[in-house]
Length: 248
Image (tube, rainbow, N blue to C red; front, side):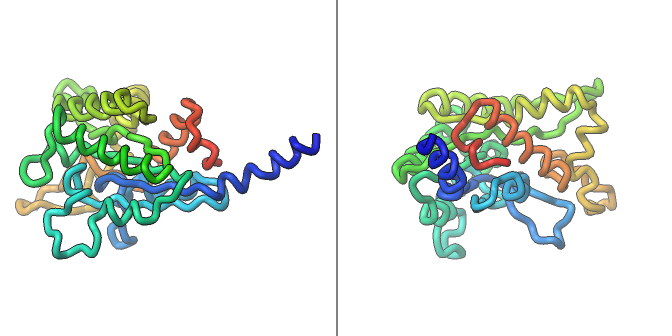
């Protein structure tokens, strides 16, 4: 009985000893109040954690798996984004990794789904494990696309990166949280109007050069960010991942 009591008393200490680090793009990143309601889902993770756990949201808007490690303009950053994150990671921590949206873009950020993208993810995983920490891959958040027939759908180019994440997870025995697939299921049940309310559909009143409203189906508002943070927690608990111990 004495050993059991001591073990129970130690649980909060174990949770407090581990922190969460987040690497990703604009859908996860932090934003200042003046950008509201634009909100990255990483901004909502701290409130999901038990007391003593610190969330370091290191996601950077506009980055891909390629540029997060090696920024386009290396003269404007003291450390590369990934290096900066890894300097803080310690044994027992968790690192959540979510890329894919900008990897699919043309130009300097591009990383092909069937080659460089997978190589980059494997590099992140190896680095985290070398520090004695646990990497967790995430598929990209769902881009709220609506087919001309009125139903939600996942663009083909997005599917390639989603499958690439799952492939890397399987090959490296790394935990994976399928934010894209699971949110898509929930959105189909909710319906298009309800799903769209989670995104920056009116881009906070922004207008394009022709004066038309800017429709943003990729980035999240505060409600959408909370939805994805809660979904991550829900899926981590469902899989009984060790990181679940850090959540309320």
